[in-house]
Length: 524
Image (tube, rainbow, N blue to C red):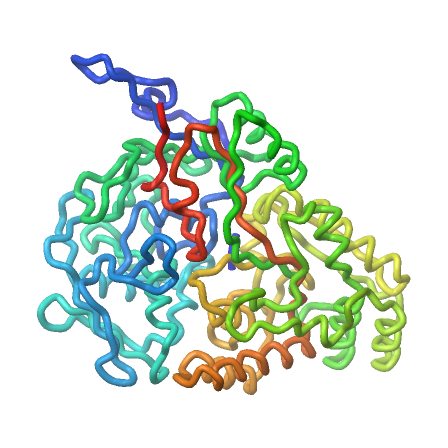
């Protein structure tokens, strides 16, 4: 589930002040200033066990290493902290950890730390944490010769290498991170390209290049991630030159306006995101399962994705008819097939009438005001208008900040209908299918469960025959379009705006969806 940021004025350390205003090295004349990245994303936690969201994923990727990661521009998992990884039998996956790795505090990084890291994510099982990504992990143990041995519940789990690259996979120091609770954000340490210089929740995150990092060293010594509560303030600071990079998210209107600004550059890349309306099958309106299904199907027949994409997002998002994104393996326009190319009020009315649903249906919809970008207000106002114009629904629209919002996402008593979106944990359709629909691995917390879909998810995740895998993915999309526990709305791109002298953006906006601070730099 993915997932943005608040800005708060806080007392910050002298190192951050110097970095923002410029400092002169002792005994020299060279002035170095931080590369400032502005964002409206919110950091939920810098502890890998405590967050499963894009706002936290971005800084975590700079702080920690994974056993496997991605080379620039390549979507196939490649060794990072691991020397090698492979299956030794159908349910055993073994990684050999590189020798000589150290955390930024000088402690050695060993197989024991890796085992501890995965065990800790599962045992803490934080409400907002990534433990669902480890649903196929039976156990993990230390082997011989600095090996990590993963015992999997599903034979031939072809997604496991991707899981190791995800938010469930950062390696932490066993001597620093407690086993049964989250570590304070300002105390976290890792072995990635950057280490935390200073941070206070909701404020500036100051990162310093990690001199002990084993990979290619960061091109920029000092990076500051600066949070904003509004896109308008982020745009203002970008235009003033107070921010080097605006990364997630300016409004679609801002992006369109600034494309013609000769002082700025606009770089577009794969976004991999999908936005959708989620129904809680337990708390949504409807007197019985048949009526609840009819209400979901009626909504699916009424939403106008084209109108949302054009009016709200100015073409920076496109209509989505599945959680499997266009161009991914097995993608089909399942909702378009099931409910048509355009809104159909007559069809929606017939569906409700056949189930004995009285209209207009009172439908509460909740969305988050600060997590999925600044245009969410307009997006959900338009959805409310579309549903109410049909005469079949009255919508009570409410918004909540993300930190409170996520605490209400539970299948027993959560919001009846609510906004969610996915950013990929890894670039494979299984990621979204499992997160959306799996009984044991879903992150949407809406109470949906279908044994047939679970079996198909297992099939697509383990099939070595490409045709069999595609067939399973297509069947999942067809079944879940009929059940409509979530209604896909939009799929987007990643657009970053920056000062003209910033370099490296083209090297990090790729199909891995991993924003790498270490490749960014500025010309003089």
